[in-house]
Every structure is written in C-alpha cells, then in structure tokens.
Length: 163
Length: 163
Image 1 (cartoon, rainbow over the protein chains, first blue to last red):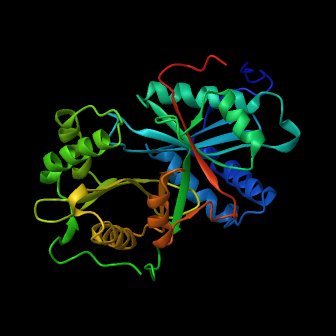
Image 2: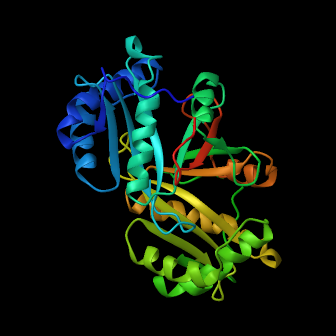
C-alpha cells in the first residue's frame, strides 16, 4: 500500500527560490553515499536556473524541506509529449520511513500526468534492494516493455574513445 | 579497435527533411525486434518536429540512409550543460558488421563534445550481449560512477498507482 505523505510534511512543487536548500540537500545526499559533489555553491545557481525553465522540476516535502525529488524531461520519439526521469529522490535520514518518499512520488506522477507525460524512468543501483523494492511497490518495472531487464550504461565523452 | 565508417556510407547529422526515411527505419527496427510501433505515418511528423528543435538530434549513414542513431538531451544538475541519451541505434540488416554503427557513435560523440555535452547514456537489454559488447568497446560502462551496475526502471504513469 502506498502511504500518503504525512500532513506534518506537506508536499509541493519547488520554485526557483528553493534552490539554495535543495542544493544543500543534493550535496548532503552525495556525501551520504560517498559520491563526488561540486558543492552547494556550484549546485545552487545551476538549480535555480534549471527550476526556472520548463524541462526540469522538483517536488519537495515539509516547510523546512526534509525530502525532495528532482525530475528532468526529455523528448522521446515513441511518445507525443516528453518523458520524465526521476534523477534524484532524497529524504533526510531522521525523516525516513514515514511515507515522505511515497508522497513525493505520488505528487511527481500527478504533475507528470498534468503535463501530458506518459512515462517516468528511474536508474537504480542493482544492489540497492530497499530502493528497488520501493520503486517496484510504486509500479516501476525494470525493462517492462519486453520482460527483459535493461541496464543503464554511461560514458564521459569529453575525450574521444581510444578504441 | 573502433572501425571508422566506410566511405561508402558517409555519416552526417540528420536534418528535419530526413524524418520520413528515419521514421520508416524506426518502424522497421521495432518490427525486427517484435516491439510495438505506432507506424511511420505517426512517427514521421513527430520526428520532423523533434529534429527541428534543439533537444533532439540524429546521426545517419549512407546516402540512402542505411543506419542511424537518435539522441535526446536533458538537463542534469551534476553538469553545466545537458547530458545525452542514445535512444536508438539501428543499422539495416544487410549493412551490419561493416563499422557503420561505430561511425555513427564516433560522429554522435563528436557532436556532443561540440555542444558541451559531457555524458552520453544508453539503456541496453541485459541479455543483448552483442550490443553490450559493442558499447563496452566504445567505452560505455554500466554504473561506472560507483562500480555497481545500474538498472533502468520505467512506469506508465498515465494512471495513478494503485499501491
């Protein structure tokens, strides 16, 4: 069962003015998971610019923002409108297991529907079983279109391949 | 070693006027892999519109277009510019194993560099070992950032989750 976000931490769409707090949370997120971060001072103006445009949005929970989801949109030839990628979903540690993540997902999907977005995509680490169960509970499937799992590959293309 | 595309099938950036032929190839691609397609008549005008905008581009090979790659761009808070997703890469069956796919990848990455794009992403079916080897030969890694494999999840969000 999907637990609605508690009324103690109401969810809402982020505005550009939330960028400073969200940048700090993004940074904390990466620090918690030992991933490199350029730091809040780099992230905040970038996030302010992104949230002011049409192709990125964020949902957040709580007046002091104790959780958020960051969503980016792209075109997809198989759909009339854009598709969405949930790039980040983070809840501050003391506020976990209270349904805040679920509340963010529900709001995010409802915003997608209102914008004519038919598909949401998420990349999840294979070994992160709790996170995979969370998304599976919310209806997400790995490689649903043909029943086969899909892997997410990436490459830094700033230098040409050496072959 | 990365084999350059043969001069018999020169690669170039697609223009909107290539949409009809590319729509037919996209449709053929899905038919070959038993995936649903809305048909070339739906895909062609959509592709024409996408190729005329800034956030989608395609590379193609051969005067009669015997192969192509379709790339969509999205924002990413970890990068100053957009990141790219190689949504489709297709070479017509009789023209495979001649380096055309590699030529398309090399051109695609060089266009990305020229546009300030630092990262290219690709979703690949886990069981498609030939395709995985192809991309790995070109430097793509699954979950390179932390050494763990990343899975690609998706959900049709046109209806709310039932929990």
